[in-house]
Image (cartoon, rainbow, N blue to C red; front, side, top):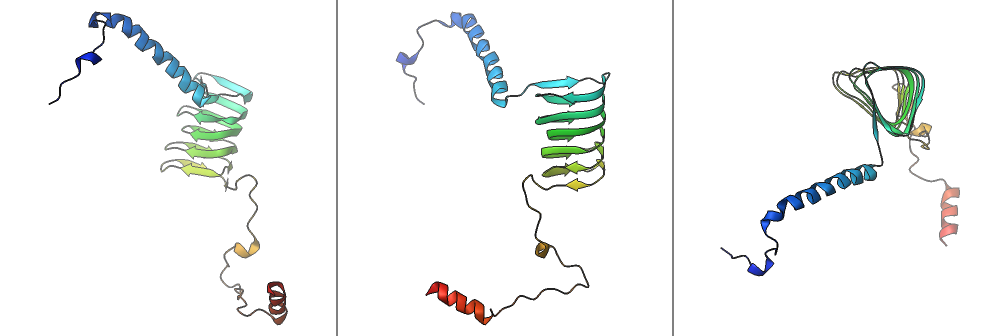
Length: 184
């Protein structure tokens, strides 16, 4: 259909392909490093056979497959409790994903996600909570965002049997006069 312009062809013969292959694979490693730098996160795993008792804190995303008792503090990072993970701790993280078992209160600044077969026995405090079908949860949920005020009592729905406040469709004479004075 159309003919390629002969002047665009590379001057070097295709035999130099092996030299090009290392240069092609070399940028792949920097791209992976750039991706990690963009995410700004390293990932750490705690294996099935590891048992930790005490306080666990850090500045990296963490996946736990083992047993942890005590306190976990990863306030700026993601904590994942793997399917084999068993946690008996107070948990503080940016985001918590539960595939295993957690006994204790969970506080997340972004989200708590209890996946299928995941289990949480304790209270959850997070602005976003997701509980999958097949997950187990026993406790209370506080989804109030940090800095958010509690709703005014008027905003609460009325209970049956309580009188409902009626809006005053006509303002009283003082309000009308004040409104006229301001607008004049």
